[in-house]
Length: 57
Image 1 (cartoon, rainbow, N blue to C red):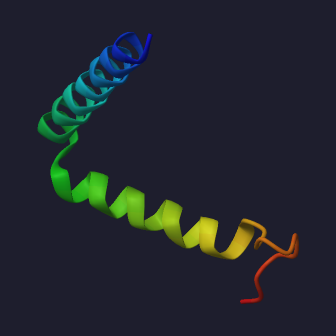
Image 2: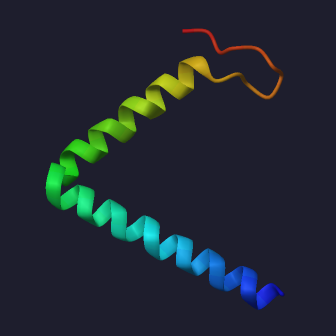
Image 3: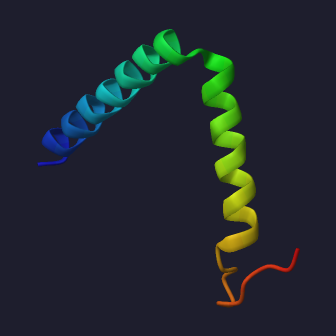
């Protein structure tokens, strides 16, 4: 059972990597990096902290 779970995770990993490679070729790696940084900034401000309160900006 653990081997089947590990194989599923490897398959999902390969699918994710493939999809990001295709996006990087189509949209450009710099665009993907900028998008990720923007999402990180939004998450830093909007996501609640472990205490359940939003961070201050």
